[in-house]
Amino acid sequence: MLAASTLAQACAAIMMHGPAFLIPALHSHEGLTLPQAGLVAAAPTLGVMAALVAWGAVTDAYGERVVLVTGLVGTALLGLGAVLVHDLVLFSILIGLAGASAASANSASGRVVVGWFPPERRGLAMGIRQMAQPVGVGIAAITIAVVAENRGIHAAIAVPTVAAAIAALVVALLVIDPPRPERPAGTNRRHGNPYRGDRYLLRIHSVSMLLVVPQFVVWTFALVWLIQDRHWGAAAAGAVVAVAQIFGALGRIAVGQLSDVVTSRMRPLRWVALAAAAVMLLLGVTAGIGWWVAVPLMVVATVLTVADNGLAFTAVAERAGPFWSGRALGIQNTAQFLTSSLVPPLGGLAVSAAGFSWAFALAALFPVLAAPLVPVADERELS
Image (tube, rainbow, N blue to C red; front, side, top):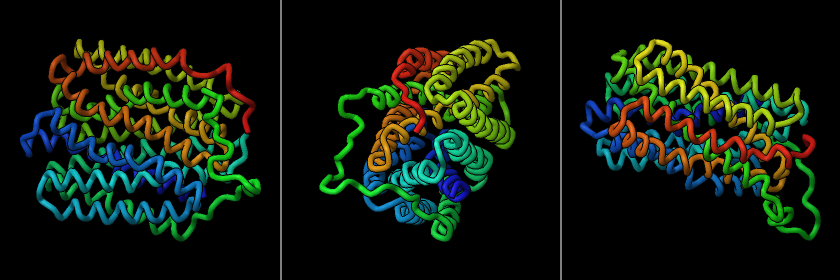
């Protein structure tokens, strides 16, 4: 269950986040400005944002397996359409719809893990599942930018298209819906709403929205920074970004295990926020000066800015319970994607106006604001 759900999320992540690596080709070959290229790259993110809560509600009602298979098959078909078309507007619409279809994996694959693992092992298991996102981004980094440079942006979308098709087959063969208790007789789907009279989930959503800003600043502009400011080739820059994503994946596992050991999701979440603020500020300063250490700091920033996701995701599922976790996880991801969809175009404006170093440094403000919002005092015993 863990392997299949992790694969599903990783392959979905290639479609959701891979178009960010089209920005150099969109800028140099298609003649778009950085803000325009960022808007095209944000199309799947907008699609994801629009579909997450709906997918979560369907998962609550009908189960995880049917949602994963349906969503991944749809992703593959829409991706194939994007490969075949040549109009840039239609291309953007199709990758946006593919992102919406890929959003099925976010809630459903997380529920598979939460449903099959006990609380004392759930942090580690979810950390492994959450590594799927940086692994997917890493695969995209070493493939999509190179294919786009050599074969064009349409050919590059074949990478997430094939990945989604493979994941759909694996899920269909392996995934079984986790057991869940019977809904109390006479209750409807709104019974047990975890948002009533409790701001715990809303605070986690707010923290995650703030912490996703530095994450997507690094994800979106690290490759462009290495190519344009550091004058690296696309293959070398993509390899470094891919290595950074691998370390980010391992970091999520480590932080998940730490949360199991200290029996808390919120305390490690606050530690991660403070560390992310410090490293983003250092990255901005060293990138502005031009020191070589800026590249290793970019790798460290990649690790720290993704480490919070598994903690928040697990905490939301645990507090929401088996009848609301699909919708709560959908709201959690929608909040993150709402914020992250604004990062490429607004970040492009910041880079155009002030440079990469200032964009990196300004991103440090968001985890500073997030740290005091983490609801450490309101956390319950893990369950």
